[in-house]
Length: 80
Image (cartoon, rainbow, N blue to C red; front, side, top):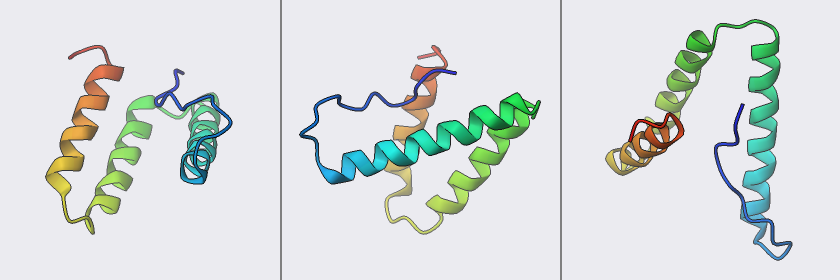
């Protein structure tokens, strides 16, 4: 499973970036564990999409976030 976000390796990055990296690492660990437990990747992707939709419900600029997500997904899937 590849890394989705390339975080800076510089030790002088802000606390927010470090916290995001920590959350990303935890998220990756959960996904890897689920895949190792033979959870269907399609079902896992559906679950992630559902959770993102719930998170986006309360955001003001949904369309901008949607475009960002779409671009990331296309890039990661090599379909852009």
